[in-house]
Length: 316
Image (tube, helix red, strand yellow):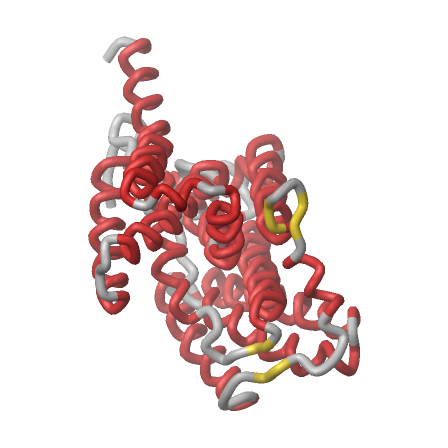
């Protein structure tokens, strides 16, 4: 295939999610004009923050050729721990929760690499384990009694947009820059495209996997903090419903589920598509119980439409 045709096809695949986002926004705006108001867009931006943080975590893991099914459970556990520790320990409590969530992620990466167990299995077990721990610590919602201001500031606004959204976007752009220009980013993509070849090339696969899963745990911990800031409380099921949307956002953005191809900017667009889609479902009067069905169909459609089959010779 000529290089020009290759570039045009790849460009079309890359721009497809952005095109879907524009169509959704214009379609919902035509049905519900108030959707395009600054207030509605600000509310929409705040709503997408937890999914955005989890999707950024999932992107790093999927680029590696793996998947993390435990991030929602870790985020829920983090929200409970933040609500319990924040009143008495303040900033130290927040730091402890972030450290713990990072270690949880790193531990899962270590087990996956050392025991050579598929990431799907390791993190599926982790999902059950950390959900159980969260429920054993708190059977119901845990309100924040003191020191809420230490996390509540992210619910403020700046230039008309929620601070939490701006911070999440900044985190996504920092990850994009890091993975694009750093050796670690190149290693992650190399492992995702072919782990055996990466090993033969001298890539420290074990260390990279542990670092990526640690990053996933850290972002899950930040999601827990964002959840507490938004709801004034921690809950053992705070992020349970966000696992499927986070995976959907990654594949909708164009990151290949088999690893190696895609990135964080695409995921940000995918998150916006998923969030706008949720609004569209509500505007259309669809029963919220059907949302998982819609996400499942969206994932299948997104993988079919946005997978770059020119660069990906084999679909696993």
